[in-house]
Length: 218
Image (cartoon, rainbow, N blue to C red):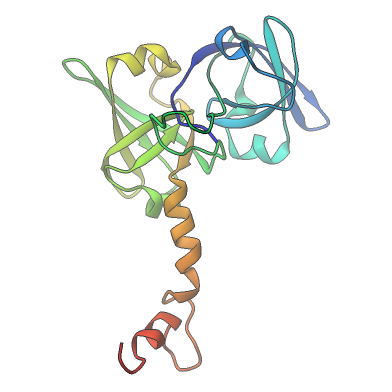
């Protein structure tokens, strides 16, 4: 579990293909302080497991399913990467609950400069629109942000100067593809209520929720 607060910008040292998966080595400093083999680390918002490390870098592996759902397959040596170690229980949750389980990728549509901050419009697959809630949380390339505005298949976030400078956001351009993870709370609520929605009707033609409400005394 992560918070979406980036600890460090690392550099992709190398990426090699091994039977369809990717072996990714990243040069870093801060996150190496107590990083051990088998630890989880968020690499541009993707939760990966450390399989080896030295005093200067660590290596992870991304399997085929991870490559299909994220931007990792597009990585090349020299790329800058957002890094965050797994959160510690008892610490402050400065961002929001982030799993590092990417739902889909989005694409930068427009970047607007304001007096101090930046407004970023991001396009995403419309089937995920139900998880995008104005003033709700979203994780973009590992960064916890608040959704400021929403359309059917795009949303806008406002980025403060500190976040812009201490993450890879300062390298964003129109068309850049990004890893998106929607708020886990919304996904759990959907899963728990799904059996009671209008999409799951009984033989009577009513949903389970409607039948429950129709009970005497309700």
